[in-house]
Image 1 (cartoon, helix red, strand yellow):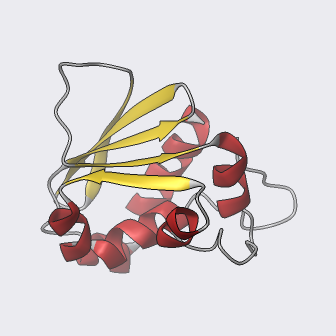
Image 2 (image 1 turned 30 degrees about the horizontal axis):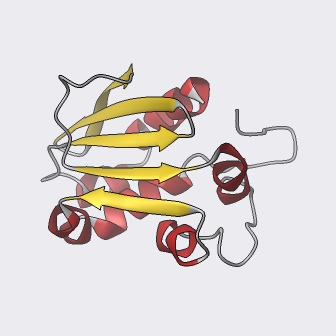
Length: 128
């Protein structure tokens, strides 16, 4: 999981339109996959750090919580219906979004496209 998040960090840095979309996004986001927690710190649309958790001392603005199988399905090159979007995961009961929803909605396109960076781009790449 950590390897996929670090790969997403590299892909974000190589995606100018996404950096432009997120240029005002400066928040910490919690990604929780079963018993693993990761704090993603964004500054000006760049992912500056990925910190494994859990930590009760790390503040976050919103959280995406899901299970490993659902996230792996989400990160497939052509995900099945319901696994194609973070709100799709919520709708089918495989994900939960907590925290300051307004911050998420204000930066929705950026965050959704960032999360899609974990998708394998060819048949040799598989998400971790």
